[in-house]
Amino acid sequence: MSRIGCAFTTGKVFIAFITCGDPDLETTKKAVKEMVRNGADLIELGIPFSDPTAEGPVIQAANARALKNGVTTDKVFDMVREIRSDVDVPMVFMTYANVVFSYGTERFVSICEEIGIDGLILPDVPFEEKDEFGPACRRHGLDLISMITPTSEDRISMIAGEAEGFVYVVSSLGVTGARAEIKTDIESMVELVRKSTDVPCAVGFGISCPDQAAKIAAFSDGVIVGSAIMKIVAEEGPDSVAHIGEYVRSMKNAIREL
Image (cartoon, rainbow, N blue to C red; front, side):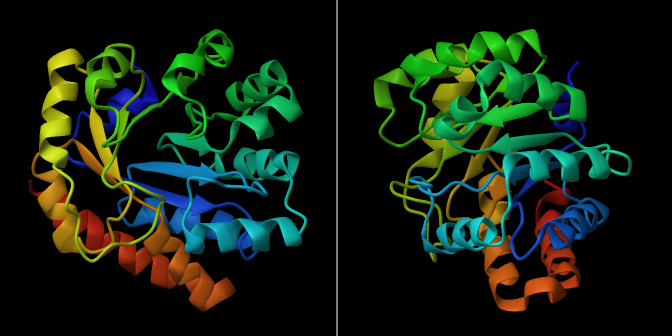
């Protein structure tokens, strides 16, 4: 079983997202280790991109700050090499097709394999175009994570049927960002996924507080949180690490006993 698959065998999974290099890569490195110490089961690492179309204002601003600070894909790779000596949980990259294309798809995924990255999320690549990346990912042992949105509708079964690693169920229309209330019928989406695959379902976009996490984890296999973490980074900068740890612990505790 892959490292991602193993993460889902011990209970409800908390997946923490962080934009690499905001405010700097040293802070990112410390934050990843702190999140794992406080219960994060899987880490989603955002490689900064100049036009992150799936992101709301919080993560867009984080991308802009990281790029302004000179963060590059190679520097992110080097950071992951350092983290892997201390961190055993699965890690996946979340970035955009142009980042991978411009680096060279084969070269990008081969380095991912070398440094211990377990999967890849490309939110701007529709299911019908995933074969541009899927074969290279398979050659190098990476799961190409499928995303299902409220507009996927009749395509949910098809997407889920070919899913790898975990299915990323998008809880809300629009971009990432914390929401006071999530109104989408996510439970029905998860049920449709489960009719088509045994691959676990994790729900993201909009989850920001322990109550929301508990409600969603009650019918899914895990929750994904990004904007709420990056809001702490925006507010606290290099001093954010301990605050992120406390936040992750509160979220993991909310889903631990479900």
